[in-house]
Image (cartoon, rainbow, N blue to C red; front, side, top):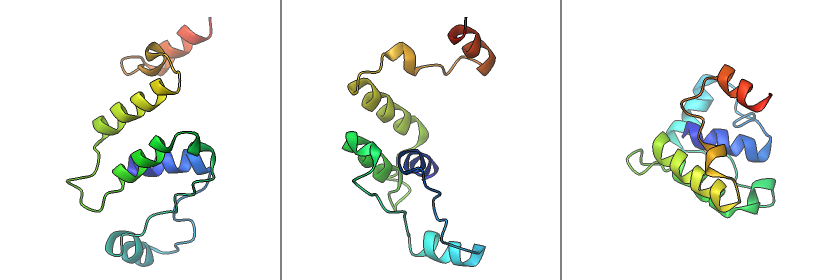
Length: 106
């Protein structure tokens, strides 16, 4: 679910669950009632509805059906590749922030 929330926040530029105040209310709405933020189709990430499908797959109520981080990363890589990103731009998993900074700023 966390990956889905990060993607949702990137697409909407909003804070998830901002209107929910207090731990008990959060537990009741999000955990027990399975409340999720709205997927507003008119926002910037609608350029690829595959992003919304990925968010929804990360938000499955049944945790066994929910994408794990590896599945979400693979799906996001596929989406970005379909939008024209080069594969060498997508994989910096073995780079440190310092080495990546050196590669891109020299």
